[in-house]
Image (cartoon, rainbow, N blue to C red; front, side):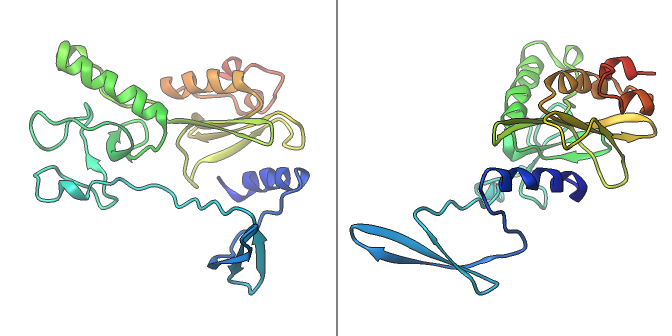
Length: 231
């Protein structure tokens, strides 16, 4: 998320008694303590050392598709299976869905690789429809990306895809318990982040899907239902 948005979330950690350190890499982890009370010492790149009873490492995700080398299935530079608009791979009769597959999005004008269970849920429906009903009866695969998270009792949801070129619009005061952020391009809603405002997310996802333009003044008013800001 852009720094102005992420900065608002950073305060949540301090309120919960957690210290959030960024731009500081882990350079080493060593066993310490005693057999009865084992701990770890975590060395950081700024020279400090933290004592921890447990260490959780988040390393991100990438497609494990090395086994497809020389198979004829085309892979992208990110390792993803290059599926088409109906999730067909480059080899006839082969389809790809979920975290390993990227697909062309006409809505966003680029190929997307979405790491979320919602993508893995939607993709098989398109593949099954194509196999059973045929391509003529099957819409192309171009869903609005979606993910959610719960952080310190706050329900955080995001739908769509935005870039730094999109106009960012605050909907509500981020100092409050519930607020949203909209990203517009040419007045059209492209993405939405909702904190404690599930109705904004539900309405926004449909507006993004339809390529709906919004009145920015009404969209910025949290008392106005987002769907009522449509032009």
